[in-house]
Image (cartoon, rainbow, N blue to C red; front, side):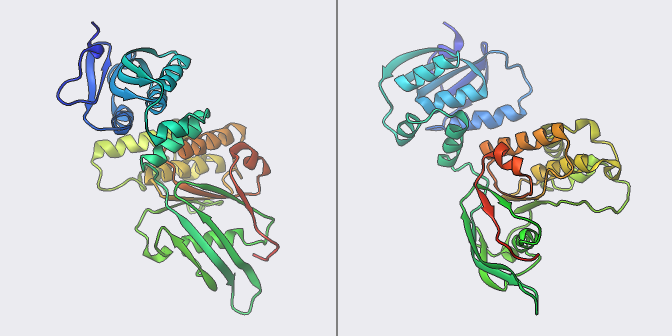
Length: 343
């Protein structure tokens, strides 16, 4: 008998082998062990050419997570028909001890009506409370400079943890002003802004990540890697810091720029460095101001891919201010159009 099919030991609820070598085990319940496995594999450098999992129970949710993780073979003590169907559709070799029509849990019921893989994965992370994002409430916010016209007038919108929003509108309609209000650089003339349950000036450092439209042109010798490293949690050890930096550079496709002087890079390259920096920051609220302004087609695709991976994986709350009509099509996010005011 293959090792992964042998009885689970030491109160384990999940064991994962590569071929016959045990590389991971967990004693948790529901989907917790599989999410722990997903985190483990982010830093695991050993062989993974044939991942084999033994789980106590698997519905469609467990099957979906194993498929994303890259499991090749699975042995399940108790399996549902929905799980069998999903495993088979992904070409995962399965064996099991007991099979039932459906697991009696709300997650199984919800997934039974869904077929979009990313949507299902997002829902599972939300139910597991693995969403990084923070709620945002903008209530009846108005802003005007002294003796000036109203730039924003009774603006209200609300985002829950991990939601996304595009903000569009012609020049002079208050988009830049709104970002300044969210960042705490300006204060509303009336109304309120809450990020989570706090005002902007009460937030912990690193809560908001901001990628601005234009970069500071001041020249001094600093590499792209050093710019990215400024955002890494200083409490991490040197090995973990290096891993965070390398991962962020890889996600944005700029590993080859790591040692270049940041101020010798093109506008599009600087934007990707800034995005890498924000990834290292692990912001709960991410604000981007015209992020496609300097990007060529390839860099633009990289940006869209990274944003998509964020919305499926870490799920920070994201707001993008843009004139780019095509970005709305590419991302498929809800869009807020600001009215005719003067910036």
